[in-house]
View 1: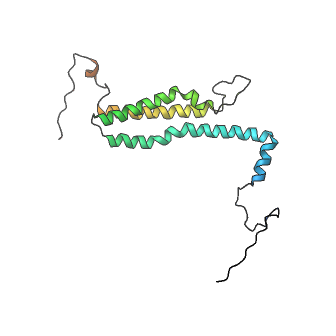
View 2 (view 1 turned 90 degrees about the vertical axis):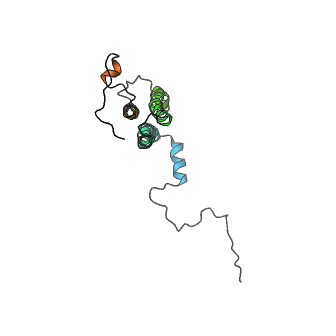
View 3 (view 1 turned 30 degrees about the vertical axis):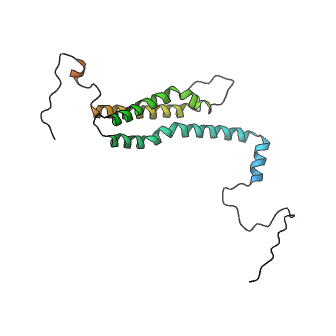
Length: 172
């Protein structure tokens, strides 16, 4: 078998390229020159990136809702340690997330010399969305507590002199 002698010359500055860059690809030289200029475009890009990341954080609880609903369904409606533990986790984790919301969104805020109101902030809508999704998670937990019969929803739960409601029939 014949061996071929391959010879590479690394002294040349640029090898000839036959492959075209894919659409949307900017070479490494372009990226370095954009960062060194420090023009207004990069500041705006950073602001847009911060708002986009804030939206990712705000929508994260909504992405967890289907899995939490599946876990609630799999745990059943009977009062057992597993179903109570899952429901307690479902109720307390959004409360802890709401209590630490300012720390969650703090890294995406831009310092401003002028005091900006909440509604004028670029992060107002992501924060409201985050709160709404956390409240929706709490409502899932409330529904599960009601399905297990742990929420006081009848008159006899609140008044000691009333007898509990008797079911008309039992199913086995």
